[in-house]
Length: 452
Image (tube, rainbow, N blue to C red; front, side, top):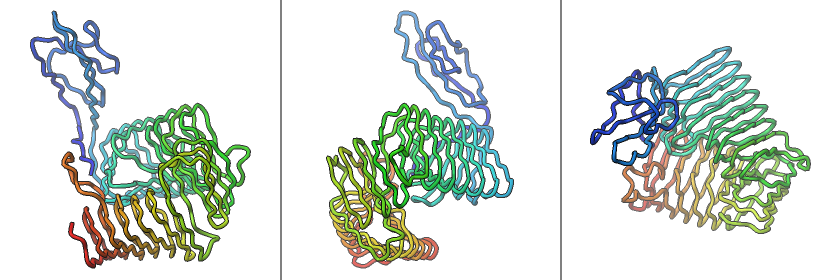
């Protein structure tokens, strides 16, 4: 887990350590001090607001020192909340000038409004998808001039659904990022949020500006017809383009960069991606398919010069496009996905009696829901294995996680096996480098367990 920084609450005293009789000049306005500009340090002083201090040491006969920078994030209050934060009706909650630790879900409905400004929001979680934020109805999230910390134990989701709105600006994420799903008729407006990551579906709208190093996933609907070039250095870009068909969401990006795109391939779709340097492909099995079996062999992170996959009645074509991940998903109706000899990102979106068979592969997080069955053999799971909601994951002759390296101070935060909410994990001759946990009514069955 990412270490929790010590919050600075209330006025703070600032001292400089001075050597050799140097004079120190400093600034509090973001400018760089020089030998003749800036405030002259004359002893301890007090600050009661967040500020960036820049300082330089000056001494006759010596070269001036480099400018050093200190970021002090000072808050007037501290809150640690382990209970769900629920807002409904016309509730309005403002979190301002606060170091706020959240160890549970945030739930908004109806016309509720959550305002977070000039604060740090720190999510504490033990594993991927444990907590998140869900906004439904006509609720609104206003998130500005703040920092967002998460424990680097896997994905943390925010969901802007129905007709909900998120307005986010000037967000800093010093550690791992959250993932924001915008669905229904939801709207997200994002300005100056580097490392933003999110999925856009249905009739939703995502507007992004002045942001860097993002990951954006396009959740194309059934029967979508798309032929797209997805750029990484963007002055102005919008999708869908006029030639695309049956796509109802809108993604607009201006003055920003994207590290990688995600593309969904649902039933009945015809998706072509060209001349794109970084894309993750999500192959989705679901309605209206029933009892279908799809075999994916040799999925890899590589450049595809021109390759086409026929997936039941869907088609995917990659032309001069490099993949950095594959995310096969199954949604019910007794559909089965068989994945062999592959290197892919894992499975964390599934439901309703879907089945997976994974053989001789390397994956990320493996997570199952709603009576899904996963059978994994001869494989390595780099992330966690999590079974919930009456699902069953069986691992045979496999490895979960990796050992701690000599240069790492803390144990690796993933590589755990977790059964919760009536989920079951069966381990047969499988090595688990992390922890094995049973939560609530979850159950882990160990048979011929390999020694750690």
